[in-house]
Length: 308
Image (tube, rainbow, N blue to C red):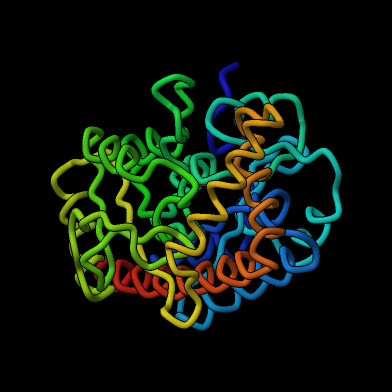
């Protein structure tokens, strides 16, 4: 017998009831808990982000794969338990079916969170930064599944741009080729995660959550099956200037190459190395930008819910 996607989802009652009445819900990923941040900042940040989404009038739906079940809407105890587990898989599109079928536990990346959110009927997702085209991709072909997911899954992703350790010009080119609208919030430049500016012109600019929601509604009405990328620059007080973080990124990338780090392990290695090189500043900025993205995502979700 063929399984239905609904049979594989476990949507908590608070999320199910909010969705049933047409309320605002914001999806949240779990790789920040298991791979993106050290303890205890990982748990503290995940819980703080949920609180910010609620304060903004939306319901947070943190997503993970737990014992082969797609859990949509983790509770605080679940998040703490996930943070304490060893061997948690980092789940993207390619290994999501395997993780579910084998009864494993995994934390969802941007791509996997988008897939699960769409299955649950959630249209807005807040994260830190998306993956993209890695440096040297012309040789390695290392391109994040996040970009193709944005092209095929109708979920609006609020982020602080793509991580600055990537090839940002090529990342924007791929998004354009895939037909993904890239909306920069209150900025004429595409943000570079830890920095507000990348030197790259914003493909599109909108200055309010209401206008962004209107663009998303129009995209859906036109029958687009792609997502929308909303790039929200980190606040001025929290950013690391591009010149400063750029030198640290170059050092971290060189260290990764020397160590032979490849595939999914590249980003966690680079984030850990940048944490060391920046004296902890990169983590503080990471936490600040995720919180800012959660606020904006909640505002967009509320606007979308209000319009039906």
